[in-house]
Length: 424
Ligand code: AMP
Ligand code: GLY
Image (cartoon, rainbow, N blue to C red; front, side, top):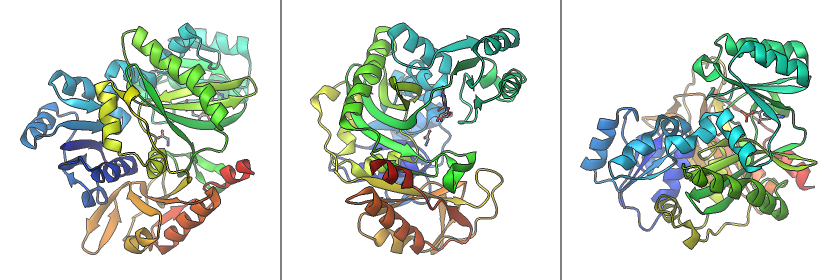
C-alpha cells in the first residue's frame, strides 16, 4: 500500500517511522516532511491547500491512503475534499474536526449528552460576557472559540485579568478565532492527556500521556507546543482509563454519530482529574505533538492497519498490542523559542544518539546539509526512549540528548520528573 503523510513535525516523523516498518507498506511519501522524515519517506514540498496538486500527486504516485497529521488541514476540510474524490483518508471531516476547531461546539455537545466538563457560557458580545463574569466571579477561564495555536486561553485569578481577557478577545487579538468566546468554570485537579482512535462508530483506547507545556524547567516561562512528554501518565490508572472511556470518550463518539458527523481519527482529550472525577477540558482531533512520539514508541501492532481500520469503519475487529515499558521524549528547541529564534547553527551527533538501544531521535524541524543537519524552526528534535521504568526511560533519553552536539539548541532538564514523583 502506497501512503502519503501530510505534515512536517516530530509527530509526522513518528508516524512515518512507524508506517515505514509496516510489512504491507509500499512507497511512503510525506508532504512537506523534513530532514529526518527524508530518511524513511520521500518528501515532497506541497501546500495542502493546493488540492489540485495534492490530487495530482496522489494520482501520479498511485497513493492508496492519506494520513493527515496536523489540525490545520483537518479543520480546512482536506479529509472531505479527498474523500469526495474517492481517496481513502485517516483523519476526521471538517464537521467532526469542530471538536477541536470550536470550543463552543464541543461544550454544547457535552451539555446535550451529559459529558462531564466545566460549566460555561458562550458569548458573541462584550456586554453579555462582562455581565456573566461579574455573576460568576473569579477564578474563571476565558477562551477564544476558534483555533488560536494554544494561546487563546486565559486563567484569570482576578476580575481585572478576566475583564482584560474579554476585552482582548473582542478587540481582535486572536482575529476571527476570538470573535466568539467561551467563559468557563475553573477546574482544580491534575491534568492528563488521553488518546483514542475512532472509526465513526467504534473506538479503541491508545493510552495516556503527560505533556510539559512551559518552555523552562519547573514549568516556568511561556506556553509552547510541548517541550517533552511521558507515556503512560501514572495518574491514568486502569480504573481511570475505564472511567474516561465510559463517561467521556464513548459518549462523544456516540454523540457525534447521532448528530450526523461521525468522528473518524484520533480523539485527544485534555482532562482535568478533579475530586468529582475526570472532566473534559478540550478535544483535539489529531495526535498530540510530542505525545504521538511516546505513544508510537510503545505500539507493537503495525500502525498501518490500525489507521486503515479507522478509515474503513472496522476498528471493532482490531486489538492493539503495547510495549509495557513507558516512553519519554525530550524536545530540543532552537534558542529563543517560543519567541524570536536565534541563529540555529549546526546539529551533529544524531547518529551516536540514535545508536543507543531503545532510542529514536525524531526530527521536528531540520534540513540535511552535507554531513550535518540545520534547524528550520522552533521545536527541532524529539529525543525519545523506552525504559523498564519512567526513570530508566528518562535517563536513556537524556543520555542520548548529551550525545547531540548542538550549541544553538536547548532543552528542559526536568522532563518526566513530575510523573516519577506521581508514580511514587
Ligand atoms: P486548552 O487550550 O483548552 O487546552 O487550555 C489550555 C490550558 O489551560 C489547559 O491545558 C489547562 O491547563 C488550562 N485550562 C483550560 N481550561 C481550564 C479550566 N476550565 N480550569 C482550569 N484550567 C483550565
Ligand atoms: N502537545 C500539545 C499538542 O499537540 O496540542
